[in-house]
Length: 526
Ligand SMILES: Cc1cc2nc3c(=O)[nH]c(=O)nc-3n(C[C@H](O)[C@H](O)[C@H](O)COP(=O)(O)OP(=O)(O)OC[C@H]3O[C@@H](n4cnc5c(N)ncnc54)[C@H](O)[C@@H]3O)c2cc1C
Ligand SMILES: *[C@@H]1O[C@H](CO)[C@@H](O)[C@H](O)[C@H]1NC(C)=O
Ligand SMILES: *[C@@H]1O[C@H](CO)[C@@H](O)[C@H](O)[C@H]1NC(C)=O
Ligand SMILES: *[C@@H]1O[C@H](CO)[C@@H](O)[C@H](O)[C@H]1NC(C)=O
Ligand SMILES: *[C@@H]1O[C@H](CO)[C@@H](O)[C@H](O)[C@H]1NC(C)=O
Ligand SMILES: *[C@@H]1O[C@H](CO)[C@@H](O)[C@H](O)[C@H]1NC(C)=O
Ligand SMILES: *[C@@H]1O[C@H](CO)[C@@H](O)[C@H](O)[C@H]1NC(C)=O
Ligand SMILES: *[C@@H]1O[C@H](CO)[C@@H](O)[C@H](O)[C@H]1NC(C)=O
Image (cartoon, rainbow, N blue to C red):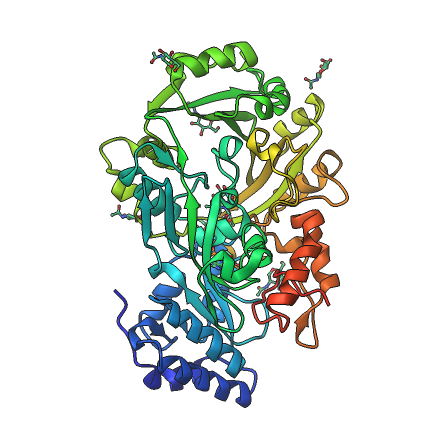
């Protein structure tokens, strides 16, 4: 565990080491730390002078390209609260002394906004990793989940306490609940049960005045609506969530089928576009398209023979066979989908799902789209044969339909519901070590592909998924100390379509001073 360095001792190091804009800011920073240290135990408050500071800062950085920028302009301190009162103190001290907060749950923000700022501002990180308790009530089929819980920890706790239950959320076990739930939460159970955000029954939050609101009743309908898909970092610091757990059978079925262009990948994906969103909602087939190959992967809430039979009728071109399937418990599945064969019985689920240690992999850039009209086979042919060069890129296609299409666009802030066939995530990995972490030195596969796709995806606005955050689509301008609605609308209409305006009105009500803000936070509408 982190060895604490008392705040008073490291202040000097902190101020000499980093060029803070002005003396007055520097002195408010020290007042902030002093204010915090009256409430927060020193071992929960690390400043850059501490040897444990940098390891803690990078501990949940997922994307290699943000390590250099985050460590070059680090936060004033990192607070790892164990209680609501610590979070309340951070907000109150921060507001009083002009220090902004970045809130981090799992640290997987695609643009790193939970631990870095592109602006010349003094900020502290509130890292919720220690608020990771999960309490499952199998009889009520509900649970209370701390925001710092990872998906792996959540799945494990549910699977162990209540083997007949599960929860619809994302694929990667190290993603944090705090960011995933606030932005929606897509996953392979969404066709059956909706997004994570659609299954939240209650929550606790610290608001912009530092008040602890311990229920949806205390926060009011608007704020409770906004935190279930309106994006993290805008409305307050959510501490915990009450979730509705959902039934899963004793065995679920995974299959993986590859098709190369020569084996008919173009026709198969063309057909998949209309078949997958219309399948029975307990069957999800997603596709990864990379380099002349399509990989079709399933989650089926039932056994292999049933899914093979269903697809023989509905999608014979795929040619799924009994031998392509694996049956396992839902809990095993959550590890298998991510780790593949490594998730065999030899490596215990505890090791796979409860390991919060991140490998900092390659540099990554992601973008997203939603599709309402199927692309033609000629378009798919072009995508499959796209010249790749040195860049490695792929597309992940996640089918909607089922429950997703039965929820109205305005029921939650996530508006991509009726008429959506599937979501596309463009992913590009590259080795950035040679260019010293310069974020601009990105190979341009992803931008070329994204431009090419414009005519085929949703338009006016070209929608995007807020959890696949992309600063290329717009960043806020701050005027008179407050992010402007007009600048936010540029990207906000794309993430939230018809719901953006309501989010901005709620922001005005709960945080008119725009204390909780970042490059892409919801601005107040006056
Ligand atoms: C490897 C990987 C796999 C992914 N897989 C999926 C997937 O399957 N499905 C899917 O929908 N998305 C997926 N995502 C996207 C993911 O949902 C978002 O990146 C999400 O924001 C991550 O949550 P986090 O807590 O880990 O992130 P963080 O970086 O901690 O937070 C993200 C944003 O939310 C804010 N925030 C965090 N916690 C709180 C809180 N408690 N209260 C208020 N604001 C908060 C942060 O300030 C930041 O702005 C994936 C991302 C990665 C990197
Ligand atoms: C982009 O998406 C891929 C696949 O979901 C994921 O592994 C990667 O971490 C994401 N990258 C970023 C920057 O979030
Ligand atoms: C399927 O294709 C992917 C991507 O090309 C590859 O990584 C994987 O090993 C293939 N799987 C099989 C079973 O051939
Ligand atoms: C598969 O599930 C179906 C429907 O529940 C059931 O009728 C069938 O017996 C099962 N088959 C096997 C091999 O378990
Ligand atoms: C946890 O994951 C990290 C990163 O992938 C790995 O280096 C480490 O060995 C894992 N820990 C255990 C106990 O498996
Ligand atoms: C697309 O489909 C049409 C009509 O079925 C066919 O003539 C054409 O060859 C196909 N194109 C590709 C690239 O497969
Ligand atoms: C990445 O690039 C660096 C510098 O060019 C090189 O030393 C390193 O081996 C590369 N890593 C991988 C995984 O290709
Ligand atoms: C990063 O790369 C861009 C594009 O080549 C260049 O303009 C910029 O100066 C580089 N930045 C640094 C810090 O090297």
